[in-house]
Image (cartoon, rainbow, N blue to C red):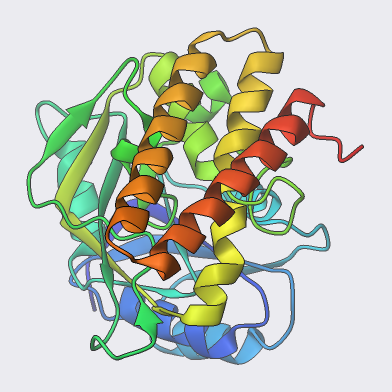
Length: 296
């Protein structure tokens, strides 16, 4: 029987039984299993994947979640978590065989951080018409603290932290994230709040998760949501009188504008269109955040 780490892995799922089965199988076959996996199910069809994982020896808690939204599901999983370390991945991700072991080593190190992010690599072969999602490919370990830009620190599909930090900064903001008018951004908000509260977050390249690729229509459909999430985060922080959000927003807008101009100069009109969608989403998200997470 595989050894187990003092880690709870949270997986939110919505009508993706095949993806969930693939994710849970990877966790069951890892070199070090988590002590438990909490699957929060907002849809249907997850029962078979959960049953198969249990049969493979994985300790799985299956929760039904009526409230829609990725942040709400992750919060439900974290409320149920029984281990001192809580990790997050998604049902369109496949953790590497050494993912849990890499997280456990990071938290056991002499200079252990408060939270860990890691590499996110594309799943499967590079095929025409498919695009990598939320990639983090850097091979150098790095620690982040203070006023680091949250999108440089990591992403929500490959994230873990000491559970004690939840009492300090709270859980995910349920006004943000997939399934809400806030679009994306629930992970950026949490990373930002952790950094502002004094946490040290380590990007650990040995902690690897593989993310399913997107089709072109799906990529275009998510560009506005991606920008909306960052805008909503900045709006909410500003509403809370955190003026550092202005610097964050400014750097984000400069980065996206440079990408837009660069794409236009090279005649890459498809990429330019994506950046316009991101910027439009950012503007809408900013208004949403300044209104306190209200749509009108």
